[in-house]
Length: 163
Image 1 (cartoon, rainbow, N blue to C red):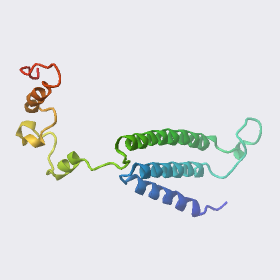
Image 2 (cartoon, rainbow, N blue to C red; image 1 turned 120 degrees about the vertical axis):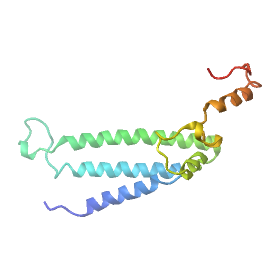
Image 3 (cartoon, helix red, strand yellow; image 1 turned 180 degrees about the vertical axis):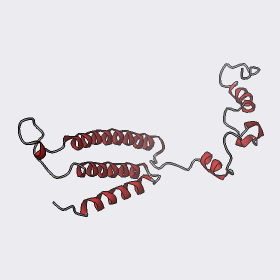
Image 4 (cartoon, helix red, strand yellow; image 1 turned 30 degrees about the horizontal axis):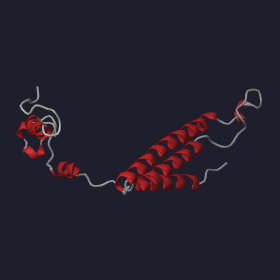
């Protein structure tokens, strides 16, 4: 049997479309991209099984005529994993729609701020040398102001700082 170019091109097209959809901010497109990646993976795993053969039942046929059951087991596993992650992403989409009436992931200002900073190695970074707006959320100088702000809402003594 001669191999055809159709199956590898189809697998490559499914992978390309799946990755393209995964890079979008819309969770529905992310779900569709993940489903395309799952289908491409299933086709890839099935194509590794080689040509069709007889059922792998002991004593039914010769060893060289038996089909390899491992790719079929891997495809079944991939189907279950794809189903589980798809259900999880659908739950995320439903929750996002119920809370914000929008299922697109918004732009995170913290990501923009981190991307705008110059390249610094984490080992060279000292939080005390940063400007107050660039410090981490739970830095020591920000905790006292947070506790004083929370003192009105909760029974937290205003004089107690971090230990």
